[in-house]
Length: 350
Image 1: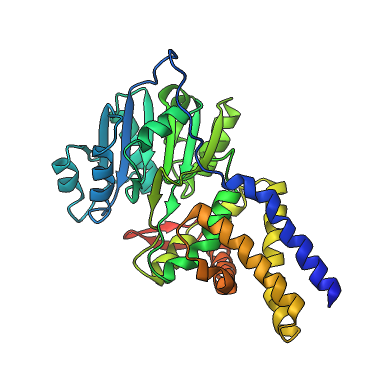
Image 2: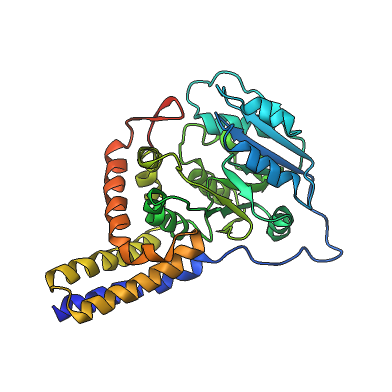
């Protein structure tokens, strides 16, 4: 049993190799006297987002940095998305029917980019919101050029949302600091057009992974960070079914885009986390296994607070979220290439 305990401890230590990837956006300002950033166009792809848009648009209205324009691309919504956007002063673009071979989001982003006149494009999902009045300025000041992305901090409000813990962690650990996140992308127009933009990834659910690859192939810098203190969102607040369908539509495929070395380290760490509760059960909750469970829970609690407002009491219960993660991951892999329903449309999961 001591052999397995030692293996579990070693695998948990792999997590410390991953910790630096959970760093938030650096606090820095554009150098005084440096060239000002290009005019900023904010593009919000939206399909039936009347419940999310007000919070995002209100947070944008409160920003100290005023964008050149805010464009909401209304993707055939059946609710009040367009009316809410107009009442908040945003420009509404209607892309029309979805062409064959396109996903709804990629088509909306493509149409928004074509309609925008700014030299700097910020694509933001409708469920994102800026946490503070200087958030947009901090984002633009930290922009290193090329393609830059933030993973919004997950505002967790219900027990069910805690089941997204390992999805959130793996999303960040497998992407930062040299990948792109789906909810937010800041890129200059020249780089956007050079890498092919959303037209290049028009048929992908996880378009950000492919965009990052195409950008690197075009010699464009790609960088990302965690958006704690700058931007946040809620993921799948409707309920467990929404959470399952949301993560099913492409998570397994996204894992396949993670660099091999990163995937090995992440897998080693998750394996260690899985061995610990098994050891507790098989040993009759021996003291040494309980101590290791406490250490694993403490490590996980620190990591979890860097990606979202996960409650401290959830850390000791992490095996529940871990089992849920593996079950939905397996479902995602089984559904790859098959139809799933998302926002009223049937799509083929990546």
